[in-house]
Length: 260
Image (cartoon, rainbow, N blue to C red; front, side, top):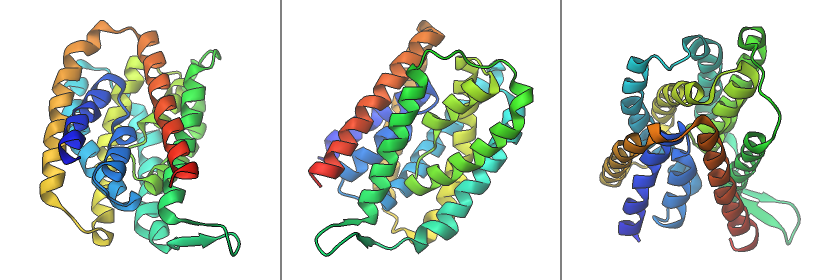
């Protein structure tokens, strides 16, 4: 199963390159279902993997001038504060088991993964909607900051970079064109993920060999994704990304609700 997991890790890097997101959408389920990690540990590992790949991938994007710098301040800082608050203070306080009745209970692991899937589902729906995006980015900085903080809390809870929520927020509330949103998202993910990982280390047992091999495979995927990215249009990127996270969200919900 480990060999399959490392092969699929290539898709983690490819997703980050193509969509500016999707790395955690893949890495968390891979580590939970194929490597046998619990959801909180997988989330912490995912922050390192995605953050490392994203910081390397964002170097070229910064040089290309596609990054919307104002959103690194108005969106990135609030999201980072929300993520640190969740990973460092709130998440360790959540009990391991919830009892709804004497016969019905669920675990913290189930809660994290189901929340993860629901967030993905809403993100996919927003990206597939026909609603036109706003073009008044500077008039929506308050909304951008609010969504940044909220997304930071949510991504800190499920242990993901959050690009599958960052991109819709930048597109619909900031009026950012899709490819620029992908570039900006990748840069925000890089910063948030690595700082979120550092904030989580004290609560997680580290398996560094697994982490390094998985990250190396994801880096290979990043290189491959860069070779095909320029061949896709903004509309194609948006549609492929939405259907991709929709499929993964449905799988996780079915697995956790009916087969856990």
